[in-house]
Image (cartoon, rainbow, N blue to C red; front, side):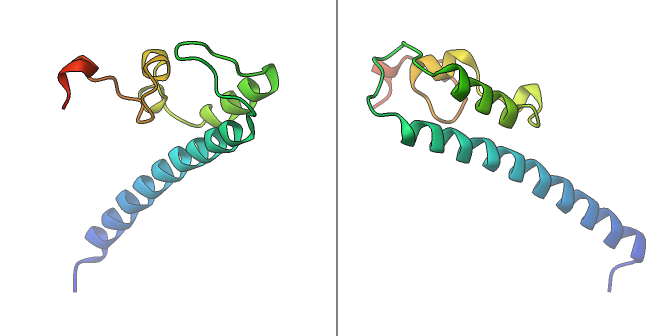
Amino acid sequence: MLPATLQFLIVMIASAMNDRLQRKLDYVEEERRILGNRSMPSPVGEDSFTAHQRRRLAEAGKLLRPEERPSAAARQAGDDSGVVSPVGREEIR
């Protein structure tokens, strides 16, 4: 059996990771709800969220750290992961 201090550290790290993933999941679920309620998809590069939808996403995103929030460039590119690849989409096969 591991010493109590090591067990405590492992539990604290696991708890922090769980909290971080839960915040990200909450944001993605809210984004999915908003996108699922939209009647028509918007053209690429055009943001057609209503003020209420933007507010809901902002409230869900407040709990995320700045580096965890999806970037504007990723949203415009249609990338769901929030990470923009340095490689152009034409080069990815």
